[in-house]
Image (cartoon, rainbow, N blue to C red):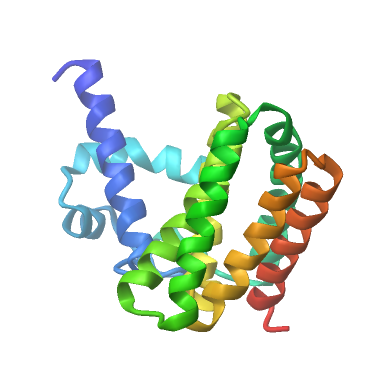
Length: 218
């Protein structure tokens, strides 16, 4: 196996692991052996061993001597730290997006959000719920990627995994949240349409604070 083949296997193992984690096939706080991860991810032991340092560096697992690998736990510190980091990164991102996004892109995002919100106002079917969740995540990924900074994008990607783990327990997209969440997005987008950078930053902070309050049970 070449080095490039090994890297692809490691990346595939990492992707499989995060998919299983977000699907709750691997539970936060759970302790697993390398052999159990082989079974859960369907990847060879070599690829599992290669991905472990990356998972540790990303804060998704930690090695517990004589016990195995402990999956990231969801606790108050994680919620506070993850949302604080999110606020710092996304405030900077939305400020830059306000200057770089085309009018056409902003109008398209507004139309997309309004369409899903209108559908949700009638009925929140499973399909509408899935689409709303995808629109939510894609919007935040888009403003981060627009910065064209791979370091920030990587930090966002790792933090987004942690946020989405929290969402799976306390702040995931629920039927009653679709309209409020999309309305919060539209407040951000309407500020962007006016090229109101300060207003967009305020709106995104308000949106992130709402998600944090839900995660804290407030």
